[in-house]
Amino acid sequence: MKKLLRTLIPFDIAKGLSITGTYFVKVFLTANRAKVKQHVVSEYPEVPAPLEPRFRGRVQLTLDEVGDPKCVCCNACAKACPTGVITIEGGKKEGRKTRIPTRWDYEMERCVFCGYCVEACSFDAIKLNDQFELAAYDREDFSLGLHGAHNVLEPSPVGKFSYSDEA
Amino acid sequence: MFKHQEMEINMGPQHPSTHGVMRLKLKLDGEVVTECRPIIGYLHRGVEKICENKTFAQGQIWSDRLDYCSAVANNLGWAEACEKLMGITVPRKAQYVRTLLAEFNRLASHLIWLATHALDIGAMTVFLYAFREREDILDINESYCGSRLTTTAFRIGGIPQELPEGFEQKVRTFLAKFPACIDEYENMLNENRIWKKRTIGVGKLSAEDAIALGVTGPVLRAAGVAYDIRKAFPYAAYSEMQFDVPTKPEADTYARYLVRMEEMRQSVRIIQQCIDGLPEGPIMAKIPKLLKTEVNEIYHPTEAPKGEIGYYLVGEKGGAGPYRFHVRAPGLLNLQSLPKMVEGSLIADVIAAIGTLDVVLGEIDR
Ligand code: SF4
Ligand code: SF4
Image (cartoon, rainbow over all chains, first blue to last red; front, side, top):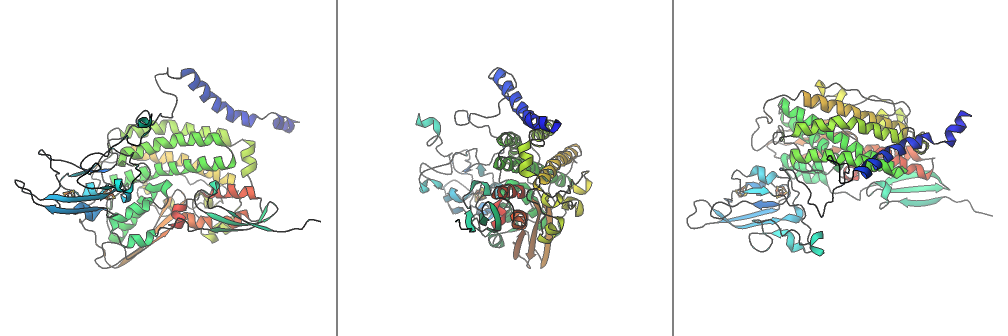
């Protein structure tokens, strides 16, 4: 008899449903009102995703006071890179003691965003910026150099393919 | 009037419940599976061979990509294996941080297992709740090393940077709320009649079979064998931690579920001890800039969330990278037990058995 009752009245399922129900009521009653937010889903494309300061995004070169790259072409980063996506050639510039890159190629499509290049550089010449929306339609857009719209000196043109631009 | 005939079908490689690109060749007699053969290799990237052409430091990024759900645990194994090969001692603080992050990773991996396993069987709600908590763990990963999934969290000789500001607070907040979340999952599943019908007695694997097939991790422990490398061959800071190794004698899918849930509780305990007893001191051992080996050969097992992940490394004289490298992936050996589990059972139980093995094809195919 007891077993039959237990089969007929699904207490076990009610127990699970009560958890879902509690959350539903909580969010329903406090939507946009509570100080402590109850809902956990973020409205990502409209509201930018919060990033940690250590976030590892795309490789970017840092500039010195005159606006030249700080890089002195020691090739330490290219050697440390596990995927070998950095190619550097050095040249000279008037009035600068150290060498200056004439070529600094970075193949983003094969970069794994590990940060080894940043650790290898003793001149603070390279950083991983906070960009992660790096999708593009053309393969060429992933080959970054010193010149052009896509380069390693500035952040990539973001928003080009993003949700907000379409509207 | 009707001809009785066995049918051979392919399950996968695009089947959503094979958790990746695994193909199962099933021979069916009606709904009963008479033969099951897993076919793997669709995700083969040649990680072992690639690493032989890289330096030891560089090799770590490929350990991320073995079992991408538990990257930190794989990083830990790789870093410790290299240290063992070169005889490097890691500072105590780095050991603690490694242990802490590896346990967080165990939680993340078990949560993703719980979510997808429950979803396969038909419990959708748990999926959402488990991912909610996993998100917090990924945030902690991100604040520590800047990456969420492919962490590259450690370096040979220690850890790359100090813990960030506010890290301890984040961990403590998480620890305060997480045990209640585990209770929540258990309240939803433990007594649920559908869950019980779909898991109890399904996918049985006896202890003898499990040992003979080299199965490790929660699957082995759910067969009543209390074998955990964290206890048997302590590494990192596990020798200083107090924790239990949960076992269950039933050896079915439900028992594996209970074992993993209990493991999560133990992980919380270990994390609590790590954060309470976090020592001060250096985070990096003194190592030469270019790591070189002598002729040497080591095998280093660690307890990844899915079982024993072992790195076998051979060093050559003056070599900057391994001469030979092999991974003992827990997933591959656990998958071998799938035919034993499902042959003679219904086809719907195959889904439960795949889920309970917690396969990640990244490490199976390598
Ligand atoms: S390590 Fe730094 S300074 Fe040297 S080549 Fe790379 S970016 Fe330039
Ligand atoms: S982040 Fe890693 S893969 Fe990318 S360029 Fe730097 S070292 Fe190479």
